[in-house]
Amino acid sequence: MPPLGAHFSVAGGLVNAVRTAVRFSCQTLQLFTKNTAQWAAPPLKPDDVRAFRTEATAAKLVHLTAHDSYLINLAAPGDELFQKSINAFVIEMERAEELGLEYLVTHPGAHVGSGEEEGLKRVVKGLDETARRTRGLTPLILLETTAGQGSCLGYRFEHLAYLLEHVAEPERFAVCFDTCHVFAGGYDLRTAAATKKTLAEFDTVIGLDRLKLFHLNDSVKGLGSRVDRHAAIGEGEIGEAAFRFISTDRRFAGTPMILETPKHDSEGNELDPVNLGRLRAFAGG
Image (cartoon, one colour):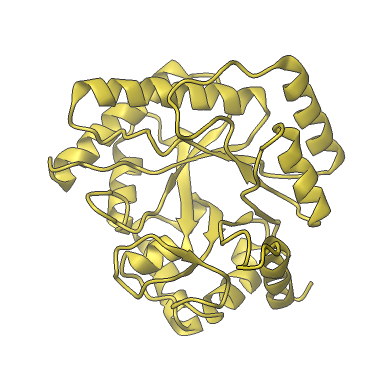
């Protein structure tokens, strides 16, 4: 069975994400290392770092992952936001390194009217500066597939292929495959056959060797909607087939799979255990 987990809250302390992962019998997790609604962040406290690393090691969690702030836009055409985004992304990398994380997930960015070609060139420039300023740090940067909402880049596999082909240090980068985003971006996942075909296209354009992490989310909106709205596993427009296929595909037996599905139902009941249970049932565990 692949390592399963979810994006967990760090309210009350970073270590609480680890404790939630343990409570739900997870093998991996994703978190934010800072408030995503603010550019600035106080330095991590040594005691907090120590507690996080100690408990994550004791729990035998693997492929620990952070997601960067949604404020960051490496495709920004304006120099002020562009440089501010690079500076913030460097800090995200430094925090991930302190916590001993393996992956840092980021969205490629939004071109905000400059066009996809110019936006992708801008992202390459931003990624290259980030890589140069964080040389020696170990987290692998994962470029996430996006739904393509607004002017967001990354909704086509070709966008991510372009970035991986043009950055100066390609070994520092790989891909996070978000099922909701891929589906909303126009790639069919509604049947096992469609999922197999979409993954084959990903392999042709990017290469499955570059796929290091899955975000498993159903989609509220339909195929090609370009709308990023996540649904519980099997309860959206994708349905169960894709999740059964991905969680049992031997090629991904060691690939971490993270839920970003709704956290609570209308009565306040926790939904992570429900969605994790569905994935475990699909995978036969």
